[in-house]
Image 1 (cartoon, rainbow, N blue to C red):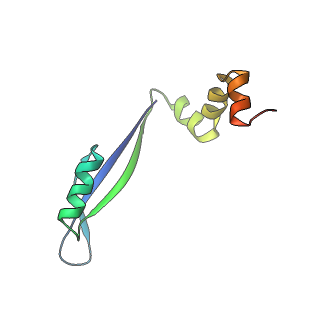
Image 2: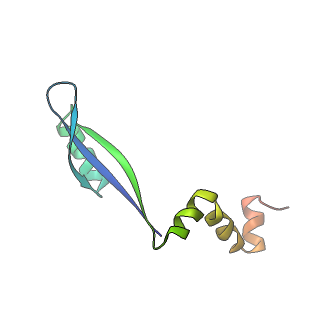
Length: 84
């Protein structure tokens, strides 16, 4: 599974709405845009690209965390405070 964090640049229409302009993966560019255009919005969005529907199911059920914990050594579990 691929996880991507993108920054959604939305420009103010001069009224009560913001309209999507583009996405960027560069946080510094998004912050620079926000500094230059005070009325525009920058929204952080996370996208998940899965190889199969099973991966999405794992994401929902927390099986990914279980699989990651299974990979830890005993010393790493002690260091994280998971076991004594």
